[in-house]
Amino acid sequence: MNEMAFRVTSNDGTTIAYDRKGSGPAVVLVGGAQDDGAENAPLIPALAEHFTVYNYARRGRGASLPGTSRGASGFTEPYAVEREIEDLDALIAEAGGSAHLFGASSGGALALEAAAAGSAIDTIAVWEVPYAVGDDIRPRFEEYVADTRRAFDAGRDEEVLELFMRMTGASDDNIAARKAAGKQTAHWADSVALAPTLVHDSLFLNRYQLPADRLATVTQPVLVTTGGPITVPYMAGLPSDFFDRAADELADLLPHAQRETLEGPDHVVDPQIVGPLLLRFFSSEH
Image (cartoon, rainbow, N blue to C red; front, top):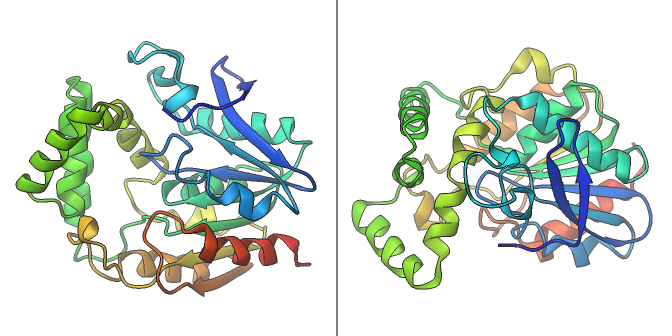
């Protein structure tokens, strides 16, 4: 688990864990579904010389989930998008009342939903937001959302994780190998503990459909970024332009959007490539 030094209490009493480093205007890093804050953490040194960087574990993840049972505060059911926005608002208040946001993967969708809901956000940068754009993939995603919901409601969190892996391209052999390797290091158990976040994220991702009417109300400058065509084997089940499709639609829809494609990165953010772009974007006058 990614341990974090600081805590803030959200509106419903849930404790949200975060790290803070640097000085200057606030930047909040918003992670994706299977991230307890570790994936965005390498961005902190890239930004902290010019900004106060807040990297947090979203509810139900890592140190923002006391214990591991579904009854812990981070897994309070029914899950609601509004609670995640309140978590972000609590962190923004802790940061001084306004902040720039960087959202990776589904964290980008959360950042945009918070902006549409009126959160005190200065500018937003998003990385590879996973809206499923195109009639060729919509049926697969609708089936995936329904299957994971059934598995989650039945308490089968390992099945939820396996469904996600199959949907993105893992074979049964890949899953078996990862499970065997992960059981030696507890990595598989950690991933299974995060599996409910996949179900929760499908709600504010609007079943992976881009909510055009809502996001068209976002008035902040938004940097929309991707790493180009998908080449990593663990996402081979998705069209190679999966993230670019969503990013192009977002850029056309958002009133004040800037679109950038960065060559080379994996879906997990590379701070050496993404960091300098974020520095320029958050530092510039818009």
